[in-house]
Length: 291
Length: 342
Image 1 (tube, each protein chain N blue to C red):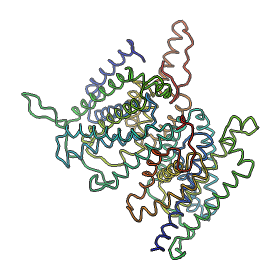
Image 2: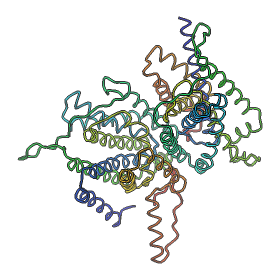
Image 3: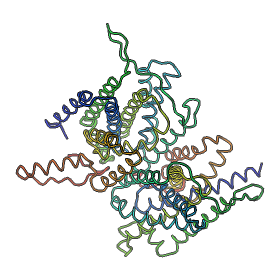
């Protein structure tokens, strides 16, 4: 029994790191430009397809393909931010509508290029290993470890480097940040691209574990919404903790309550939290007007 | 937009064109297009009441459309109710759902409201997909009945079994919905709704219970969407979960935004152009969505009033060049949350 519980916990945490990584990009973007990017999942989807093309058509190793996906999506995100979101910063709901338009463009472009049939990236480590009494895919474990290391690195980057400090300053107050000499536009571009890049890497991982379809970004994006609300919109630490929490809740709920409703637990939690504590489990209660 | 002869002429032109349409464009296919246009006029006008006029960015419109469709079909097939009784009950059910959801969710603003309604929309789709004993899951339901017509004295029983009859049913409903929304937004209630969009705290300070007004707009708009679904399901004779998912909401929103948010005519022009053009030109749905995505983004950045704003600007430019130059009343670019009404 305790081995079963441990196995569920481990699987939940592994899935949770992925949720946390996708949510981190969303929360960074929201924190710095106030725009909720509904098309964040499409960054993951594009990353996944780029990795797929690199692996299957150019016979690149998975590591090279993942890096290529991150680079390609970083460029795409840069273009998107410069050409669309930059013009919606003063009107955040316009930004939200723009991101809905981006979903339509990116999903249907992928549909036109790759079709709707599910594809998959051959995993570099397909073996199952025994870990503390529970069987686990090596691919998933490695993906989770790499993701955790990246998340830790990202937190250190935000805390310690001057660019990281510039990002946090811009998120707090863009006007003051620009007065002290921070190039706000550039910092916002970089932050947006950073979040999208992280999503692209998750896309490459997801492609080796599950399948690729043009609509694959929807569910991770939804989970990321749940996570950023639970963690408090704009909070980096909150997103990581809430991401892990959601992974564990789904893992246990799927095993003990209903596996068909597995994806519903997060939304039910989300609606409950929004109604009781809209500023999130870990977020700070904001001014009345922002809520 | 507000009152005046031009407005009345436009309304009359719409009524005349809609009534004469089956004679002008014969053929089953053109009638089908007309029905689709009427369907989207209902869906976009009702969403316009919620997002456009009241400023409540809720993205679960397709779910209420789906509650209407599934509700009416299931009440007829499972409980054996008369179609029009089921039709009415499905709309009331959607209204009840909207009231429960709105009562809690409308306390949230902006992105939070969007996420909460988005989550509801996904839960609804999950329910349709997974409650297979009731909804037949992703395979959908084939609808095998047609709406019976009202029993008239001295006439044999009839039903809406031809496209002509179905067209007039949709056309009458669409005209009623447009009239209703136009009536509401120009009434005292409508002024409060607009005030809430522009500054909710101010509206509350002036003594208007904002929550009650927001709830009214949300419930009324959702019920109209459910009416569209309850009427459309037997016509199209097949319903499935992915007809009522978030992509449908986005599509409805695109038509509303491109046609012109916060105008009565915008949803009508948007539905006429955006629903029928790709069908007539034979554009694939995926290409259509890519094109609309680009148009939507350009509109959000450069022309937040949509085609209606463009038409108004062109009209002003024309009248300026022909008549004496009036006061330079170039509108500042309106946005979703800021005041813009003339």
